[in-house]
Length: 67
View: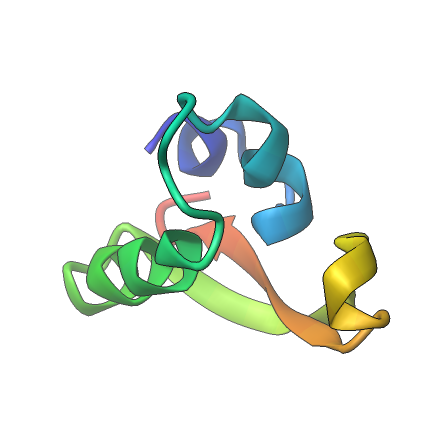
């Protein structure tokens, strides 16, 4: 919700560094899907992942639904 409220595009790359310790980065996708189903965010494209373990695979780019 915090990223969605800015009106700026964001992805898991932007959220990952702010995860509390112990939260698996893999959980981010599920949270994004939940927010999209609730109408908080909407998909606008893809960007390359910055997580070294993903080898730059595409991750969804999102924007707040009211922005």
